[in-house]
Image 1 (cartoon, rainbow, N blue to C red):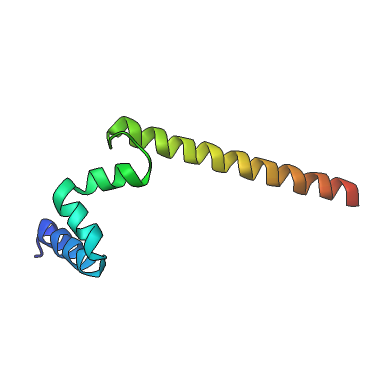
Image 2: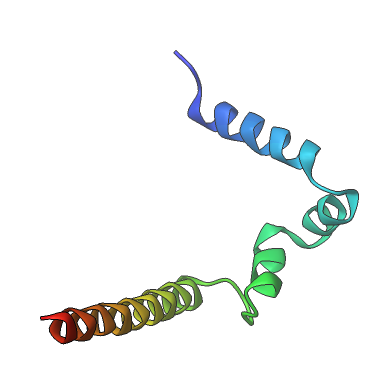
Length: 80
């Protein structure tokens, strides 16, 4: 039976081997959570900040889809 923790560590090591040296150095020095926070312009990666980021992205996507569906409905009504 395989060890899930060992599998995840091996998977992460394989990913790190493919990353540019600057990113690997940043992750090793500051931690992945700090790199992720910087990438997503968050003050820190916490459960609250991640939930807020995901919620905002979902709400934005739903609004975009709502606009597209509305436009398609309007086109359908024009064509009869």
